Amino acid sequence: MNQIETNDLFKCAYLLAKSYRLTETKYVDGHQVRFTIEGENLRDEEINYRTGNAQVNPLQLKECLDFLREELNQTLRKNRTGRTHATYTTSRH
Image 1: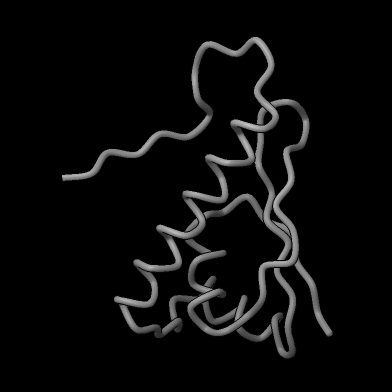
Image 2 (image 1 turned 180 degrees about the vertical axis):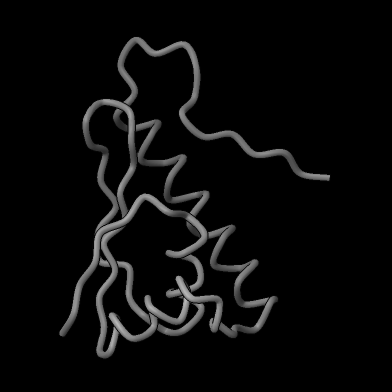
């Protein structure tokens, strides 16, 4: 079983859309959220992402992005202490 930790929201969404598992979402260094992903052949899929050879269903990718944004925002809300601005914002059209 392979595992990676990343704060790259798009890479994480891509990997989730490819059926990898999100095992942890954590707040680190007082300003960053990191996602831990695990699954078989994870390194190969990460190479596909980095080299531009990634292919994924766009609707699944959107659903995974929405899920991760909610995870990120929940983690920020739980850990925010005395902060007046969010680390991550998004606009919806």
